[in-house]
Image 1 (spheres, rainbow, N blue to C red):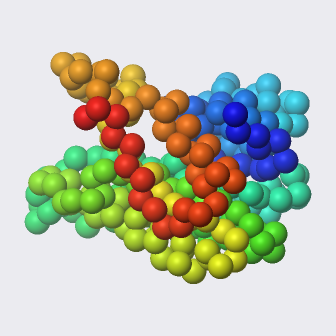
Image 2: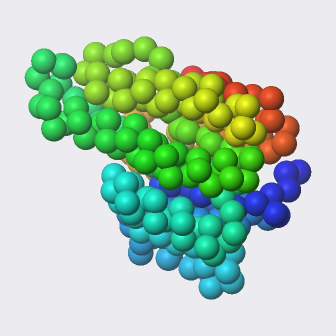
Image 3: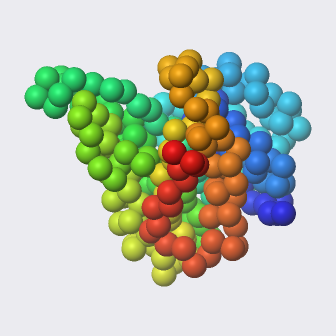
Length: 237
């Protein structure tokens, strides 16, 4: 049983299926939460009671706005006194045409959504962690980031960038008491994926709650020796 009762966890993409599973897991473990998404109504529906009790700060923030992200982390420290763990869950997937038919704006959008959001949140959080002389950063990359696939060039490249960012930050920060790692999920068992792939064997997929368990481990003291890892969580697929 993990105990995060003295820690503050920032979760991006908190209104999504994986973000909600992570929030539930860390809340159950006693953490105070900073829950971030562009959909404030969904945040309030999911976590309004936590916010009323002072257990969570809800923030509708565009993670592509560097100044807004800086302000978010400052607000988190003002309310809770510290930031111990950053979970970069926000991101997205889109199939596309072959690379030579991919519009520049589509390519840029995938990198903005998956890589630039990680850059902005880490850039804002790391100075606070350095001041504390401790911290944990966990990024959600993807299995697809390990190998390019047809009609997925922008997505696979953007998730590969998340892996490389993770490795670079880990090398920069490991001597400062900060662990940076990423997780490579297989197909998540979510309502959207079931609707998109109705003939698949859902039992082979990864439950968001199982992925949240991996986050708990990496964020805990048990993960203290792990730096720069890209951890596969593929289920049975």
